Length: 192
Image: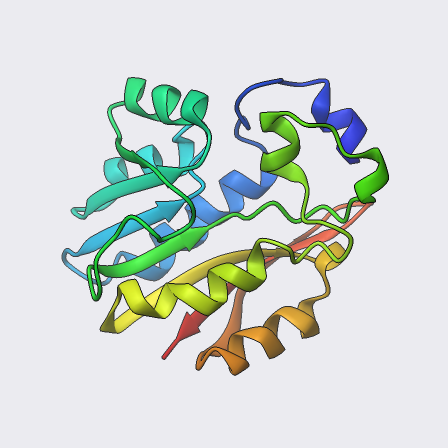
């Protein structure tokens, strides 16, 4: 599904889709062996992933989003949510896990619209416009044995993202992949 088709689904808040489900399932699988911890979902949108994790794990789940409409919707799901850009609002070494389903669709800036759905979907020309600053800053909020689960689309360039993760001090392994006619989605586990 391309950006134009997704735009027709919602105008204010990104709603759960195959990428949301894949990230939630991977996180539950990868984190279920830890008895508890503190987790941050960056860019929570509707709060679907955070709600799934809170229901399945005995973790303290916090979410963030830049979009005030998304914050309200996630809050209505019972999620503790903070309005902010990526990990900026949080202190150092605060989380055992950080999850992110970033805006990853490559988008020509000349056709972008100025609305919240564009913010939720557009990854800029490379698809990595939000992934790059996230990888540059996320280590600050991770505890020493913390883990990042990052959803990556084949449209974004998997090798480019793993290289960026390496430059940021992470080792990356693919923990699950799902293929669609238009892209493959992979959840990367990043460890320090």
